[in-house]
Image 1 (cartoon, rainbow, N blue to C red):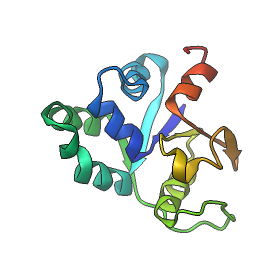
Image 2: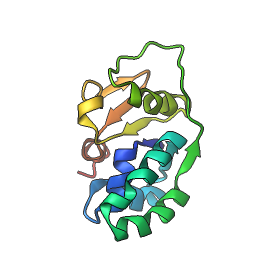
Image 3: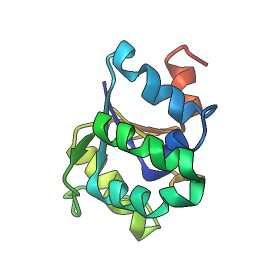
Image 4: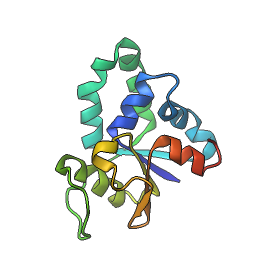
Length: 136
C-alpha cells in the first residue's frame, strides 16, 4: 500500500515518540506499506523541524531516508474541492503518485476531505487509518 504523508504527519513522526504518526513509520516495513511524500512536504518539514527540538531534528534524516520522495504535482485535470491553495499540491501530488491513502493531521485545511475518498484515494488522519487497518 502506498501511503502519502503530509508534512504535518512527518513533523509528528519526528517530534513525538508517542504519536500515531511515528507508529505508522515504525511499522510500515512490517506491514508492507510504502511511505511516500513530495518535495513540497519535505521542504515544509525541513523548515519547521527545528521548532520541535533537537530529538526531532536528529530523527528527521532517518525518516527522510525511509520515504519515497516524488516530484511535486501542481496541476490536475480533475476538479478538486480544497480551499487552501497551499495544500492543493499535497493532494495533487498524492493522487499523481497513485497512493491509496493520504495521511494528514491538518484538520483545518483538509477537514472537508477527511474520512472521504478523492478519486479513489482515502484521506485520513493517522488514527482513523490505523483503526481502518484493525490496529486502533
